[in-house]
Each structure stands twice: as structure tokens, then as C-alpha cells.
Image (tube, rainbow, N blue to C red; front, side, top):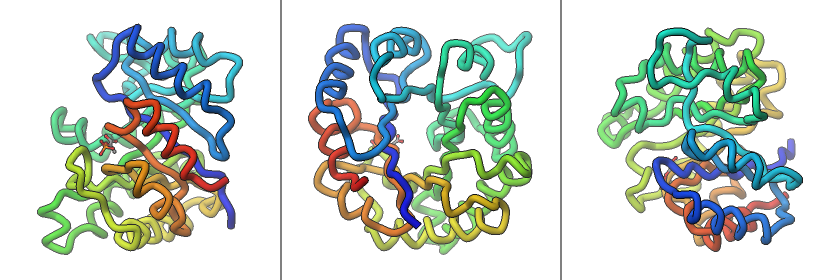
Length: 248
Ligand code: PEP
């Protein structure tokens, strides 16, 4: 089945109003792309990004969302707040949040549920560490991470975007080979098929040191439906080149 590709920039904690304006302008000017394109920006920049991108087909999202609706959760941002001004995506379970903020599989699943409940599509990240890969645990780890989300979302599981991001490839310059990535994507697709009627329409993105020179081969794999791009999403020329490497 042919799925339209999706390329998402994850700016992490980078940017400033002037830097963002130049970066977004570079992406906007390079349209049209043969794939869907989104940027996930730090919370304070969401509103300005929404204004800058309004009238274009570029999408935008957040990098996290609270599992709670509202209340005494200092520092948290709810899905309702994001949805109120048109946020399309929220990354959940990025490995940096799992590692640095001790986010559990269940918390990630609850965040995905909170996002979906407000019409924000969660981009659910899964991925193994180098030690886990070397111990032959890749399959068990990613299946466990995705399973928590599938069980929590039940009949809504088909509404998410999944991102396979091997932790050892994030920001390291090491990229999974297209064959390594495809093998895990195929496992994830099979797991989704057992849980969601529309699994063959769902997008499974690859993330981990995607660059202009490796994007095309990664994105040409049958179960790789685009990318979640960290470092290379901060340079308009690189991000645009990655979006252009993505076949329609
Ligand atoms: C990420 O942080 O989601 C990511 C994939 O980073 P990078 O592209 O820099 O490896």
C-alpha cells in the first residue's frame, strides 16, 4: 500500500524568535513538497509558529503534552491548551523524555490518550538503547513500548503516528541502515495490524541522524513512511533537502 510520506522536524530546545522566523521562511519558500511536512517546536513558539504557517500547508506540533486534563501540574501543558489554537501533533515518549524525565511506557500511553482525546495526533516514539540492541532485545523493547500505547488507546490505536528512533542513533551521527530500520518497522507494522484495522494506512516514521544524504534510501523502504528529524531540522537547507528526498 502506498502511504503519503510525513517528515517532521523536532527542534528540541533550540530556537529564538529571529532564528525561527528565518528557518520557517526557508521551509515555506521551498514548497511545495511531495510529502506532508511538520515542525514540532518548543511551547513558547507554538503560537507564533501557528501564525507564521497559517495559509500554508505546513503543519506544526508540540514536543510533549501532559497526560492530565488540567489542574495543579506546574509546568505542564494540556492537550486542550494545544488543541485550542490548532496544534496538529504532539511528540510523546521521545527517548530524551523517557531517559531524562523517567517517563514510563504507561505515562507515554496516557499522554497519547490525552492528545487524541483533544484531536491532537500523538507521534509516539519507541526505540532501543545500544545496550539493548547488543543484547538482542530490540524487538522486545519496541514491542513493549508500543504495546502499552495500543492497550491504553484500544479502538483508537489506529489514529497515532509511530516513530521508531533507535536511541543509539539520535544525535550521534550513527544511523540505522535502511535494512535495520525496515526490519524494526516491519515488526511494528505487524504489531499494529494485530491491533488496528487501519494499520496499513498508519505512518511509521524513522528517526536517528537522518540527513540529506541518507534520507532517500531510508524513506524508500516499504514500511518507512517518512522521518522524525532532530539536528538536521534546524537548518532550512538540510530540512528542505530531506523533505525533497521523500517520494510522494
Ligand atoms: C530526534 O531527536 O528525534 C532525532 C531523530 O534527532 P537527530 O535527527 O538529531 O538524530
